[in-house]
Image (tube, rainbow, N blue to C red; front, side, top):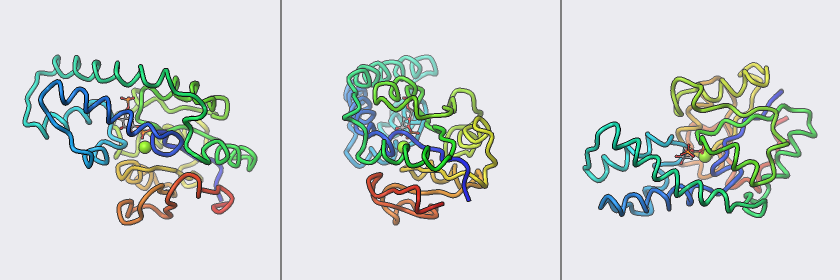
Length: 212
Ligand code: B16
Ligand code: MG
């Protein structure tokens, strides 16, 4: 029933959401904006500039476009320093197994991550060779929750959207998958990921064979 599996990265294969959030919190403190732990969920799947906008709005802080670019770069510096420390041990439990299940089932494997740091992170985690394609978030018009990034991932592996299974942990990402005309598997809480076709609590409980 499927010819490709399109994976989100942060929160599905690697637990980087807290690293992104730590970097945003550090930037927030520097701006006098306190981010409570619940804010982490709001930033999941949201791209870099979108995340910064949410944080500035939360703090009631206004900055020019140029100042925002500088702030986003500063946060990215904090994040990339942490990415360079990642190792295969930082893969979420089950992540490598799920990728191998997809490969062994003959499915194409593509990445649909909003993160511009995805290629170096895949290298650090030792899973880069398992991917047939990585969709470039800079190459699509609209970020998640628009369907563009998932459609681009499908295009790169030459598979029609209705033959793609998309795997996501964020509300924004599930909306992208559904609006792309794909089947969505959510990783997390079914009361949060309400538009997903299936939800499993963690990647460790995900078995590609269940969907074939
Ligand atoms: P970067 P995903 C997303 O990745 C993260 O969930 C989100 O928190 C982050 O802001 C975004 O990537 C952009 O990342 O600043 O590295 O380009 O979940 O789509 O894999
Ligand atoms: Mg994610």
